[in-house]
Image (tube, rainbow, N blue to C red; front, side):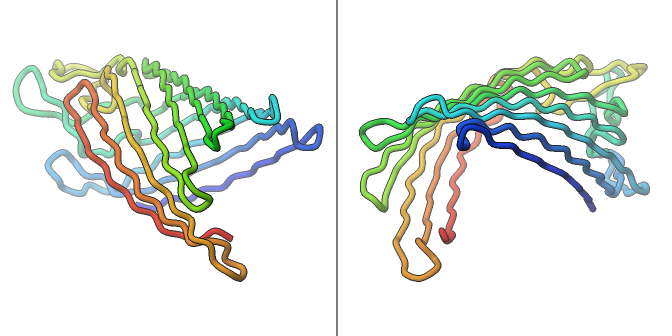
Length: 238
């Protein structure tokens, strides 16, 4: 698998940075091995994607920040990973049959509010739609609380719901011109509940602090995927 990308971004500030307008464009080209559903390599495949986005960030009050962003993506080429299979009504399995193009829209809104007890509330909403028939809504809330100058904790909850691709199936007729059984493209609801603890240990010199972060989350969705995720991050703040 090889991937190349190139992008361009521009931003303009107004009213002493109280208002920021940003625009970006990104082009990505992927080139990868093609495998059939039996695991045999059968040459190569490629796909490309072009994304354009436009965003606005606004300081609403001395303690409130909000932003909105719209993005549009066009993808062309081999849309799947080539080895996924689909159960057939006649018995056995066949390869996925996907469109050669996908048009995707995403609208994202964010808000951050400082809380007077040395905490912060962050809210997130995302609307997504594409020409495969998927329409999705995602909402998330995060609450951060500083316990000491070096230590803070956070909790978050996320809910996601989506319709499935119009050609999603768990049992496809043999003559179907489009078919996919990927559970990520199925109708589903999902929930994520998590928390983290963060410690920034002060240092001297150009490195301001040693950053330590431990996070845990529980992810469940209605088509029988359940995950417990633990992550650890270490870095430096300059």
